[in-house]
Image 1 (tube, helix red, strand yellow):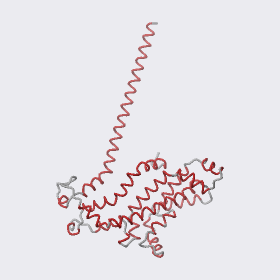
Image 2 (spheres, one colour):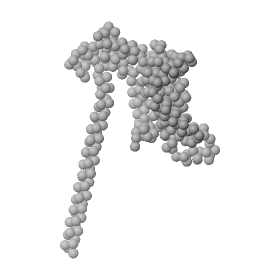
Image 3 (tube, helix red, strand yellow):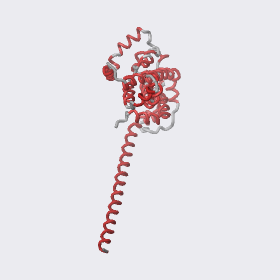
Image 4 (cartoon, one colour):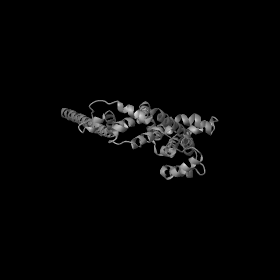
Length: 314
Protein backbone atom coordinates (compact mmCIF):
# COMPACT_ATOMS: atom_id res chain seq x y z
CA UNK A 1 0.00 0.00 0.00
CA UNK A 2 2.83 2.37 0.86
CA UNK A 3 4.49 1.66 -2.48
CA UNK A 4 1.20 2.33 -4.28
CA UNK A 5 0.67 5.63 -2.47
CA UNK A 6 4.23 6.68 -3.22
CA UNK A 7 3.77 5.88 -6.89
CA UNK A 8 0.47 7.81 -6.95
CA UNK A 9 2.04 10.84 -5.33
CA UNK A 10 4.94 10.73 -7.79
CA UNK A 11 2.53 10.45 -10.72
CA UNK A 12 0.46 13.35 -9.36
CA UNK A 13 3.58 15.46 -8.97
CA UNK A 14 4.66 14.70 -12.52
CA UNK A 15 1.22 15.64 -13.87
CA UNK A 16 1.31 18.91 -11.97
CA UNK A 17 4.78 19.66 -13.29
CA UNK A 18 3.62 18.89 -16.83
CA UNK A 19 0.60 21.16 -16.42
CA UNK A 20 2.77 23.97 -15.06
CA UNK A 21 5.18 23.47 -17.96
CA UNK A 22 2.35 23.57 -20.47
CA UNK A 23 0.98 26.78 -18.91
CA UNK A 24 4.37 28.44 -19.08
CA UNK A 25 4.79 27.26 -22.66
CA UNK A 26 1.36 28.65 -23.60
CA UNK A 27 2.13 31.94 -21.87
CA UNK A 28 5.42 32.11 -23.75
CA UNK A 29 3.66 31.52 -27.07
CA UNK A 30 1.04 34.18 -26.27
CA UNK A 31 3.75 36.66 -25.28
CA UNK A 32 5.71 35.96 -28.47
CA UNK A 33 2.54 36.39 -30.54
CA UNK A 34 1.77 39.71 -28.84
CA UNK A 35 5.31 40.97 -29.39
CA UNK A 36 5.17 39.96 -33.07
CA UNK A 37 1.75 41.62 -33.47
CA UNK A 38 3.00 44.86 -31.91
CA UNK A 39 6.08 44.87 -34.13
CA UNK A 40 3.94 44.41 -37.26
CA UNK A 41 1.47 47.11 -36.15
CA UNK A 42 4.26 49.57 -35.34
CA UNK A 43 5.87 49.00 -38.74
CA UNK A 44 2.55 49.40 -40.56
CA UNK A 45 1.77 52.51 -38.51
CA UNK A 46 5.16 53.95 -39.41
CA UNK A 47 4.53 53.31 -43.10
CA UNK A 48 1.26 55.26 -42.92
CA UNK A 49 2.67 58.01 -40.69
CA UNK A 50 5.86 58.57 -42.70
CA UNK A 51 4.22 60.80 -45.37
CA UNK A 52 2.51 62.83 -42.63
CA UNK A 53 5.79 63.24 -40.73
CA UNK A 54 7.54 64.29 -43.94
CA UNK A 55 4.77 66.80 -44.65
CA UNK A 56 5.00 68.34 -41.17
CA UNK A 57 8.79 68.42 -41.24
CA UNK A 58 8.98 70.01 -44.70
CA UNK A 59 6.28 72.57 -43.95
CA UNK A 60 8.43 74.14 -41.20
CA UNK A 61 11.59 74.50 -43.30
CA UNK A 62 12.90 77.73 -44.72
CA UNK A 63 14.03 77.99 -48.33
CA UNK A 64 17.63 77.77 -47.12
CA UNK A 65 16.87 74.49 -45.35
CA UNK A 66 15.27 73.12 -48.52
CA UNK A 67 18.38 73.92 -50.53
CA UNK A 68 20.71 72.50 -47.86
CA UNK A 69 21.23 68.79 -48.53
CA UNK A 70 22.40 68.22 -44.95
CA UNK A 71 18.94 69.13 -43.60
CA UNK A 72 16.70 66.08 -43.95
CA UNK A 73 14.12 65.79 -41.16
CA UNK A 74 14.86 68.44 -38.55
CA UNK A 75 15.06 72.03 -39.87
CA UNK A 76 17.45 74.55 -38.37
CA UNK A 77 14.45 76.52 -37.17
CA UNK A 78 10.68 76.49 -37.40
CA UNK A 79 9.62 78.78 -40.25
CA UNK A 80 5.95 79.61 -39.60
CA UNK A 81 5.70 82.06 -42.51
CA UNK A 82 5.10 79.08 -44.81
CA UNK A 83 1.64 78.67 -43.30
CA UNK A 84 0.89 82.37 -43.76
CA UNK A 85 1.88 82.22 -47.43
CA UNK A 86 -0.11 79.00 -47.94
CA UNK A 87 -3.14 80.49 -46.18
CA UNK A 88 -3.11 83.52 -48.48
CA UNK A 89 -2.49 81.50 -51.67
CA UNK A 90 -5.30 79.10 -50.79
CA UNK A 91 -7.67 82.00 -50.12
CA UNK A 92 -8.46 79.83 -47.13
CA UNK A 93 -11.55 81.54 -45.72
CA UNK A 94 -13.44 81.39 -49.04
CA UNK A 95 -12.28 77.96 -50.20
CA UNK A 96 -12.94 76.47 -46.75
CA UNK A 97 -16.55 77.63 -46.93
CA UNK A 98 -16.87 76.17 -50.43
CA UNK A 99 -15.39 72.85 -49.29
CA UNK A 100 -17.88 72.66 -46.42
CA UNK A 101 -20.78 73.34 -48.77
CA UNK A 102 -19.57 70.78 -51.32
CA UNK A 103 -18.87 68.10 -48.69
CA UNK A 104 -21.35 68.47 -45.83
CA UNK A 105 -24.51 69.01 -47.89
CA UNK A 106 -23.82 65.95 -50.12
CA UNK A 107 -22.93 63.99 -46.98
CA UNK A 108 -26.35 64.72 -45.46
CA UNK A 109 -28.08 63.89 -48.73
CA UNK A 110 -26.25 60.59 -49.19
CA UNK A 111 -26.87 59.45 -45.61
CA UNK A 112 -30.62 60.06 -45.92
CA UNK A 113 -31.22 58.83 -49.47
CA UNK A 114 -28.89 55.81 -49.28
CA UNK A 115 -30.43 54.77 -45.96
CA UNK A 116 -33.90 54.77 -47.53
CA UNK A 117 -32.71 52.88 -50.61
CA UNK A 118 -30.71 50.41 -48.52
CA UNK A 119 -33.73 49.79 -46.28
CA UNK A 120 -35.91 48.98 -49.27
CA UNK A 121 -33.36 46.65 -50.84
CA UNK A 122 -32.36 45.01 -47.59
CA UNK A 123 -35.75 44.39 -45.95
CA UNK A 124 -38.17 43.85 -48.84
CA UNK A 125 -38.39 41.32 -51.65
CA UNK A 126 -40.40 42.65 -54.60
CA UNK A 127 -40.54 42.20 -58.33
CA UNK A 128 -37.49 43.83 -59.86
CA UNK A 129 -35.53 44.10 -56.60
CA UNK A 130 -32.70 41.96 -57.96
CA UNK A 131 -32.56 44.07 -61.11
CA UNK A 132 -32.34 47.26 -59.04
CA UNK A 133 -29.60 45.70 -56.93
CA UNK A 134 -27.70 44.78 -60.11
CA UNK A 135 -28.03 48.37 -61.36
CA UNK A 136 -26.62 49.61 -58.07
CA UNK A 137 -23.63 47.32 -58.54
CA UNK A 138 -23.29 48.58 -62.13
CA UNK A 139 -23.19 52.18 -60.86
CA UNK A 140 -20.47 51.11 -58.45
CA UNK A 141 -18.14 49.68 -61.08
CA UNK A 142 -18.61 52.36 -63.76
CA UNK A 143 -15.75 54.89 -63.56
CA UNK A 144 -16.97 58.49 -63.25
CA UNK A 145 -14.57 59.51 -66.03
CA UNK A 146 -16.74 57.67 -68.57
CA UNK A 147 -19.85 59.76 -67.85
CA UNK A 148 -18.29 63.11 -66.98
CA UNK A 149 -18.98 64.61 -70.43
CA UNK A 150 -22.66 63.62 -70.28
CA UNK A 151 -22.94 65.03 -66.77
CA UNK A 152 -21.31 68.28 -67.80
CA UNK A 153 -23.68 68.64 -70.76
CA UNK A 154 -26.69 67.95 -68.53
CA UNK A 155 -25.65 70.35 -65.78
CA UNK A 156 -24.72 72.97 -68.35
CA UNK A 157 -28.23 72.82 -69.84
CA UNK A 158 -29.67 73.14 -66.34
CA UNK A 159 -27.35 76.11 -65.70
CA UNK A 160 -25.83 74.40 -62.66
CA UNK A 161 -22.20 75.06 -63.58
CA UNK A 162 -20.36 77.14 -60.94
CA UNK A 163 -22.99 76.28 -58.34
CA UNK A 164 -23.25 73.72 -55.54
CA UNK A 165 -26.16 71.94 -57.24
CA UNK A 166 -24.15 69.32 -59.23
CA UNK A 167 -22.81 68.04 -55.91
CA UNK A 168 -25.89 68.42 -53.71
CA UNK A 169 -28.88 67.40 -55.86
CA UNK A 170 -27.57 63.96 -57.01
CA UNK A 171 -26.59 63.18 -53.41
CA UNK A 172 -30.18 63.60 -52.22
CA UNK A 173 -31.26 61.04 -54.84
CA UNK A 174 -28.80 58.35 -53.82
CA UNK A 175 -26.10 59.26 -56.31
CA UNK A 176 -23.13 61.56 -56.06
CA UNK A 177 -19.63 60.40 -55.24
CA UNK A 178 -19.63 56.70 -54.13
CA UNK A 179 -23.42 56.73 -53.70
CA UNK A 180 -23.78 53.12 -54.86
CA UNK A 181 -21.24 51.95 -52.27
CA UNK A 182 -23.18 53.67 -49.49
CA UNK A 183 -26.39 51.95 -50.65
CA UNK A 184 -24.63 48.60 -50.39
CA UNK A 185 -23.42 49.39 -46.87
CA UNK A 186 -26.97 50.17 -45.73
CA UNK A 187 -28.39 47.19 -47.62
CA UNK A 188 -26.04 44.75 -45.91
CA UNK A 189 -26.64 46.35 -42.52
CA UNK A 190 -30.43 46.16 -42.77
CA UNK A 191 -30.24 42.58 -44.07
CA UNK A 192 -28.42 41.58 -40.90
CA UNK A 193 -31.14 42.83 -38.55
CA UNK A 194 -33.65 40.26 -37.22
CA UNK A 195 -36.97 40.01 -39.07
CA UNK A 196 -38.77 39.91 -35.73
CA UNK A 197 -38.21 43.64 -35.33
CA UNK A 198 -40.43 44.41 -38.32
CA UNK A 199 -43.03 41.87 -37.27
CA UNK A 200 -43.27 43.19 -33.71
CA UNK A 201 -43.64 46.76 -34.95
CA UNK A 202 -46.35 45.79 -37.48
CA UNK A 203 -48.27 43.91 -34.77
CA UNK A 204 -48.33 47.19 -32.85
CA UNK A 205 -49.87 48.84 -35.90
CA UNK A 206 -46.81 50.55 -37.37
CA UNK A 207 -46.57 50.99 -41.12
CA UNK A 208 -43.47 50.75 -43.30
CA UNK A 209 -42.51 54.42 -42.86
CA UNK A 210 -42.98 54.30 -39.10
CA UNK A 211 -40.97 51.08 -38.83
CA UNK A 212 -38.15 52.71 -40.76
CA UNK A 213 -38.15 55.95 -38.77
CA UNK A 214 -38.72 54.61 -35.25
CA UNK A 215 -37.15 51.14 -35.35
CA UNK A 216 -34.66 50.72 -38.18
CA UNK A 217 -33.11 54.18 -38.42
CA UNK A 218 -32.10 54.38 -34.72
CA UNK A 219 -30.49 50.94 -35.04
CA UNK A 220 -28.60 52.08 -38.16
CA UNK A 221 -26.61 54.80 -36.37
CA UNK A 222 -23.28 52.93 -36.79
CA UNK A 223 -23.86 52.55 -40.54
CA UNK A 224 -24.98 56.17 -40.79
CA UNK A 225 -21.83 57.38 -39.07
CA UNK A 226 -19.58 55.27 -41.32
CA UNK A 227 -21.33 56.54 -44.45
CA UNK A 228 -21.18 60.12 -43.17
CA UNK A 229 -17.44 59.91 -42.52
CA UNK A 230 -16.65 58.25 -45.85
CA UNK A 231 -18.84 60.68 -47.76
CA UNK A 232 -17.30 63.69 -46.02
CA UNK A 233 -13.73 62.55 -46.71
CA UNK A 234 -14.33 61.60 -50.36
CA UNK A 235 -16.27 64.75 -51.20
CA UNK A 236 -13.75 66.91 -49.35
CA UNK A 237 -10.75 65.47 -51.17
CA UNK A 238 -12.34 65.20 -54.61
CA UNK A 239 -10.92 67.60 -57.15
CA UNK A 240 -11.85 65.71 -60.33
CA UNK A 241 -15.56 66.50 -60.36
CA UNK A 242 -15.04 69.93 -58.83
CA UNK A 243 -12.53 70.89 -61.53
CA UNK A 244 -15.20 70.19 -64.19
CA UNK A 245 -18.22 71.82 -62.59
CA UNK A 246 -16.54 74.76 -60.83
CA UNK A 247 -14.53 77.21 -62.93
CA UNK A 248 -15.02 80.40 -60.97
CA UNK A 249 -12.22 81.20 -58.45
CA UNK A 250 -14.87 82.31 -55.94
CA UNK A 251 -16.46 78.83 -56.01
CA UNK A 252 -13.35 76.69 -55.81
CA UNK A 253 -13.00 74.29 -52.86
CA UNK A 254 -9.72 73.69 -51.07
CA UNK A 255 -8.86 70.62 -53.18
CA UNK A 256 -8.94 72.40 -56.53
CA UNK A 257 -7.35 75.54 -55.11
CA UNK A 258 -4.46 73.44 -53.81
CA UNK A 259 -4.15 71.80 -57.22
CA UNK A 260 -4.08 75.24 -58.87
CA UNK A 261 -1.47 76.33 -56.35
CA UNK A 262 0.58 73.24 -57.17
CA UNK A 263 0.40 74.06 -60.88
CA UNK A 264 2.24 77.33 -60.32
CA UNK A 265 4.92 75.72 -58.15
CA UNK A 266 8.54 75.37 -59.18
CA UNK A 267 11.66 75.49 -57.07
CA UNK A 268 13.41 77.94 -59.39
CA UNK A 269 10.66 80.53 -59.02
CA UNK A 270 10.08 79.86 -55.35
CA UNK A 271 11.38 83.23 -54.14
CA UNK A 272 9.56 85.28 -56.77
CA UNK A 273 6.21 83.54 -56.54
CA UNK A 274 6.31 83.03 -52.79
CA UNK A 275 5.86 79.33 -53.41
CA UNK A 276 8.20 76.46 -52.64
CA UNK A 277 7.94 72.89 -51.45
CA UNK A 278 7.63 73.96 -47.83
CA UNK A 279 4.69 76.21 -48.70
CA UNK A 280 3.05 73.38 -50.61
CA UNK A 281 3.37 71.06 -47.60
CA UNK A 282 1.94 73.78 -45.36
CA UNK A 283 -0.98 74.10 -47.76
CA UNK A 284 -1.55 70.32 -47.63
CA UNK A 285 -1.66 70.48 -43.83
CA UNK A 286 -4.24 73.27 -43.93
CA UNK A 287 -6.38 71.25 -46.36
CA UNK A 288 -6.39 68.04 -44.28
CA UNK A 289 -6.55 69.74 -40.88
CA UNK A 290 -10.40 69.96 -40.72
CA UNK A 291 -10.69 66.25 -41.62
CA UNK A 292 -8.07 65.40 -39.02
CA UNK A 293 -10.06 67.23 -36.34
CA UNK A 294 -13.26 65.43 -37.38
CA UNK A 295 -11.46 62.08 -37.23
CA UNK A 296 -10.07 62.76 -33.74
CA UNK A 297 -13.53 63.67 -32.46
CA UNK A 298 -15.31 60.72 -34.08
CA UNK A 299 -12.65 58.00 -33.99
CA UNK A 300 -14.44 55.86 -31.40
CA UNK A 301 -17.75 55.99 -33.28
CA UNK A 302 -16.03 55.24 -36.59
CA UNK A 303 -14.34 52.11 -35.24
CA UNK A 304 -17.60 50.94 -33.70
CA UNK A 305 -19.47 51.60 -36.93
CA UNK A 306 -16.95 49.71 -39.05
CA UNK A 307 -17.17 46.71 -36.72
CA UNK A 308 -20.99 46.64 -36.67
CA UNK A 309 -21.40 47.14 -40.41
CA UNK A 310 -18.98 44.31 -41.19
CA UNK A 311 -16.54 46.44 -43.24
CA UNK A 312 -13.61 45.15 -41.21
CA UNK A 313 -14.10 41.60 -42.51
CA UNK A 314 -14.50 38.36 -40.63
